[in-house]
Image 1 (tube, rainbow, N blue to C red):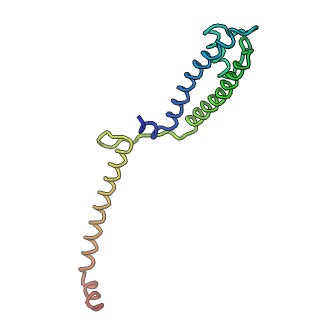
Image 2: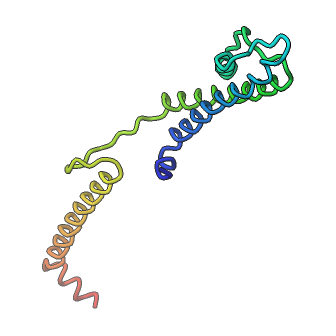
Image 3: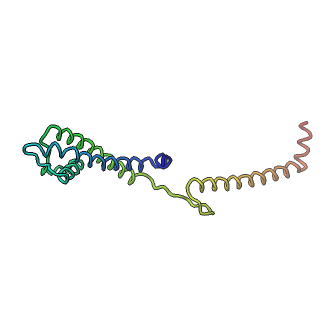
Length: 158
């Protein structure tokens, strides 16, 4: 699980943010109802009202049909609003990144592998080709050095 988060940081951050949002909406709805339902002029009186208010506030829509009238409810509202702005910013950044980032393509190797393993297989294949080419060059160099004109030059250098 930890490896997945490290390899997929953007998706991991999105997962954490969305999980936190679900908890925040539920907790803020549960916290605001006791304060507002007892207040004179309070319009958030049921769990459904609290849930609706929390979602509308978090998404920064704010219809105005339900709003906190107590200072405790307003403090909860400020927290929900600030975290809602953070949520919108995080989601916007994630979507922008997914649209603008270059696509990841997994090149398949002959055995059908993909990803890092496919790259490793391809590198080994290229190294094998390079070794073959180097051996052919060494053989050709040996042939050239055995030619009479090079053999005489080699003896005169000594």
